[in-house]
Image 1 (spheres, rainbow, N blue to C red):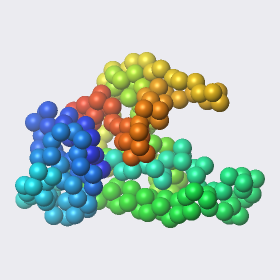
Image 2: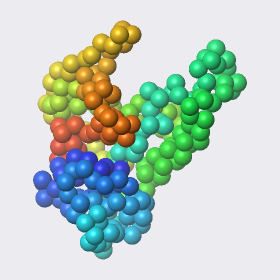
Image 3: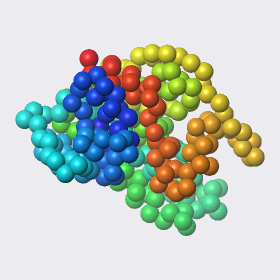
Image 4: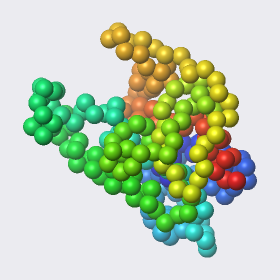
Length: 229
């Protein structure tokens, strides 16, 4: 599982008896360093394995069967669009707007993130699923094959998750439930409660990113069961 420090999907696949591994530049938080490559994912793909977080090595004689990737969405999601341009330039044509003073390199970061996303989609693996929220990938690369929510798989929460698939079927809903509680902010805007909790309960920006990007258990189970058949 590429870009998955949580090991949520990895553990769902392992529970079915599959030899699954997570890969991320971060330490795993899922409790299984013996299943985690803390390296560049493309090195792991090319070498068919490498050094695990627990210090041991795993290499396969065969190419990887399946990759499910969760690339960072910070610079790709539509929710971050307001940070690209100077707040005083809202009425100007896009080409005339200055970079945001707090994030002057945001445009460069977006191009890097998009290149990384596309490279994952086009990796030399037969079956691939890459997920991300609604963002610029649809217009700069291609539209997703499917958009799903946790409430389609038993978790009462709304989180639009776009899926770009290669040689994999669309996910079929397993347990449609309520769309989850929402929190109304002082501005009048409402957010899903799980997202609001991520903003208010996290202590650092890194922790906030981790909480916001989590994969819900029901969706992870559906991915493991349906895509490993």
